[in-house]
Image 1: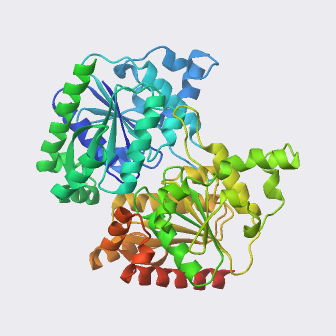
Image 2: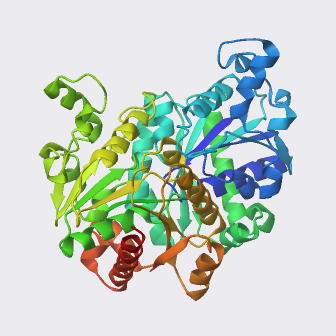
Image 3: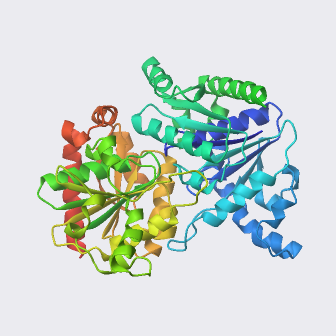
Amino acid sequence: MKIAVTGKGGVGKTTISGMLARLLAAEGHRVLAIDADPDANLASALGISEAEFRKITPIAKMKEEAEKRTEASGSGSYFILNPKVDDLPEKYCLEHAGVRLLSMGTVEQGGTGCVCPEHTLVRRLMKHLLIERDDVVIMDMEAGIEHLGRGTAESVDALIIVVEPGRRSVQTAEQIKRLAGDIGIKNTFVVGSKIRDEADGRFITGALQDIELLGLVSLSDVVREADLKGVSPFDIGGDVVDEIRSIKDTLFAKVAGAS
Amino acid sequence: MKIAVTGKGGVGKTTISGMLARLLAAEGHRVLAIDADPDANLASALGISEAEFRKITPIAKMKEEAEKRTEASGSGSYFILNPKVDDLPEKYCLEHAGVRLLSMGTVEQGGTGCVCPEHTLVRRLMKHLLIERDDVVIMDMEAGIEHLGRGTAESVDALIIVVEPGRRSVQTAEQIKRLAGDIGIKNTFVVGSKIRDEADGRFITGALQDIELLGLVSLSDVVREADLKGVSPFDIGGDVVDEIRSIKDTLFAKVAGAS
């Protein structure tokens, strides 16, 4: 299954992506996590240190190298070979607790341009990557909606929109749902995040009745503690891991049912 | 003074931009606010309703119309005329409580491309807009760092990086500071946001010693209440307005001192 996680900035996309990836790997799935946000730190949410993360080459560099090796000149030709997860060259991948991590790349220097070429590469990789029945690819998207203009996630099997209790977060979710429809994404779901009490839960379910809800994740000191310690909340454990497990079960039941 | 407000997603950029704009207008400045985030809602932080906001034309459409009118063919020629704030055509501006609001534009349809052309227009507008001594332009940037690759804010007099207590928000701030230096922005400042207690304040000042601090904004129910009601926190008032006033005073003292 190919999954993308999206939503307004700061709602908890990266934390939820990282926990889902770690949980699925712990349950025996082969998991590829893709950090598709030039400003995110999926590595840290997976429990990988900053220093380890800096060792891998962003896939933005894959294109030039693939072209050199294959002497192909068209862009993206590497991905048209339909690589499997195991075929991805090791220098682009970091493995931690059963999760392989790829990074899209970031803005290295101010004034040097947008990250459109990086998005094009990620879109092609997602499209052409061959996965087996139990493989899972989880892509943590950049904040906001521009990636939907770019169609970066157009070939995913499920798009998870993370929403926190608040009007602006809900507005973003509604816009994402509409734009995702434009690029042909069939399975769009909501996960409520930073839920403090029952009223927050009711706010989310009431505000987003048109999008299927996978579940709610409580506002938890575990997440804050993990961020400050630089570990994955999955390693600390507690209720929040149970909430993620329930969301994962619901997702798999719904997407398997839909296909 | 031309100001851009930036930072990781969800830290409070839009709220702080909106309150600064309203405060400056209340003090007699002529204020132009620019919503440069395809996923933000600066209008709502200024106290403008969704319905009112939909009436204005995003400046992305200004280019075609300007070209039609002037029969110029080069892109951006309109801005090279160095318009003043008052010259901006009314259909692109919404005025509320003394603040004129411009919108960059958003992604109208999934799969139709990036917002690079919109960023180019905003960059040119910021560069060529002529302002008088007491005029203030406040631009609310998109979450993250891509706008620094694009150089959208290259001609501002001050860049305010909003930071919440948390490692990832601090990492983004450090990266922004470096990238802002690349595009020649001289005055970069930090504002701490969502501060719950003294420990949070110490975390911000300790983590970002290399960037000048303008002040701290407390985590406040006023902001949450304003978001749910669709008004500006400035209209509700309270301590948070005093904190914004102090930040504004420090900013003006530092930038006036530096120029």
